[in-house]
Length: 377
Image 1 (tube, rainbow, N blue to C red):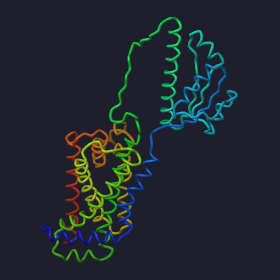
Image 2: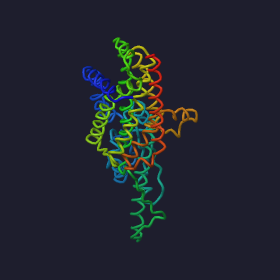
Image 3: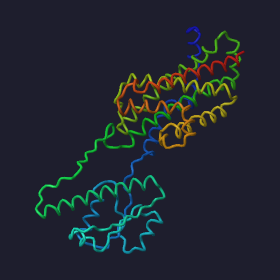
Image 4: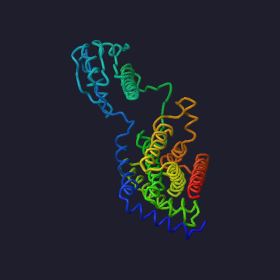
């Protein structure tokens, strides 16, 4: 392989990309748009839950309990109901997701130190939101119950109340439990994979459709020289797109890189080379740009979203699905990206994942070279 032969291919490919406004938009502006769109659209934070209340007690004590739900951004009080027949109505039409029913003897039971039953009705059509809302209700009710218990014990002369278990949780890496810190690295993986595979899959196919593939075939170029020459512009542009995505993640969602920028760039470079090789391999298998785009989208978007751990935990999937996920490169790059960005760890922590990404990049580049050699011969 001679670098002097690679340079003209790289320059030619770079000029084609610059002249092709659609491809240039995909590589530079599409990542920023995707980060903005998915960053705000995808969120696991459940806030401002519509709350309706049926207060059958109507005392200062019951109103104080209701106010405990409104001191945070998790619940918004929308309705005070007048009777039990309205509970089903507000849940059926979606006006409320949680309905709190307070019994008529709420304050009397609390003043005597008795246990009181409070009914919580939840809309379970969205199981994730319902489970989160139930957790909020349980935490708020437990905290309010502890306040009442403390006041009751102080009234009888106990100035200090010590609990049997001193529970002090400490959340590492994401103390605020913001879903953006979990989702932004996954969004970056999806954007980089879509950028590299789709853009490069159109590369060789474009040569076929324009009739310039024959010129490459009769030239003294080796297939690996053609592959490297075509990859260099996309690697550079993809790294620029990755920098734009990281900058937007920091500006819009406050997700800064805690680890080494150099190690992050190295991991991205290995992943991008694998994605570019995969795109070039696809371009040697199909004959039209439409078919290349469809195959690229089919092999990147759905598998990388469903089988990478981006949204759904892999350990909760059936064993056959977990086995299939082992051939998805995003499965290995995602923990590396989250480790460097969110945790600030080094590559040695994820050497197995990096080893797979290197093997994958070498494999797809080799297959692309073999396929292109066959076509050129």
